[in-house]
Image 1: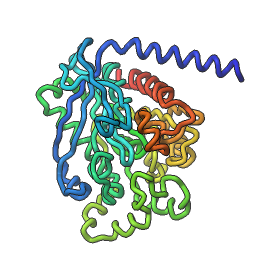
Image 2: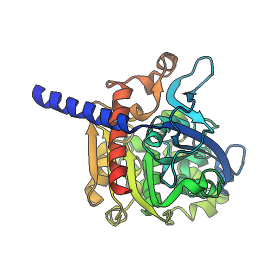
Image 3: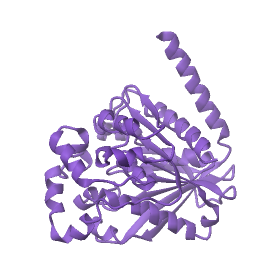
Length: 359
């Protein structure tokens, strides 16, 4: 066992070194906004605005600045580095849509987005209205989760129309990646149709499953509260769309990190997917238990590549915590495995997967 662990460790270090060697460019960053009609029902201020962040390869030597989350004098998360508004290096670039988890944000996933940008990808991440950590969380933002795929579609259209970024988008090499609820979003974008009643039935039968429990990001968003909101006449037009197809045309590859809400998909919806799918999950995940989520998806989706990370929990896929973050947010920052190690393995898996599927 010691020999096996040592060999695996050496292989991982070689893969990380190889991926780093390919990172010949800096990570550029641009931000923008567009409008999404459904944002008005999810956003606490009833705004129709959707924020997005784009990371991309920038010329070597571009001046990068620290990316953090939290107060400027005492940040809680260290996301990485990027060069704001730097020129784009390269012509048409393979393009990835990136969806964060419940209560996360585009920036929270910047550790992955900037790493992919350095490896030659144009990455479009969004702040899902009413369901991100930068704004007030709302019950509708949490409940109307199927509308997240519309956010990715709108952000892609906005970037394609951007005079600076648009010429670098390659719609013929389009992939999607997502963490937690973002993994569910990625499956929607790939063409799997959700079934709200199936998810409700699952949670009725398994109320202790992590996906059915309120998350610490929004402890009041219980299944009971969601069911009551779903019965509201004001939400009827949106609830009526719950099981609609939300595929984004052209998605060729799907990368999932600790995917959640997998029970919202009927087996035939997952088994009919034809895109390559890669899943990375933590074996110690209690929020999106592998058995009812990532492993359930693997059992149904043809040809899935699954990587299990021992002793890794759900929040290990969030950005790296600062010392202040570890003090103030122990539930999100305490890990058995250093986040840097977990991130490195996920980055290697993503780079390798998209290199193979988006040639």
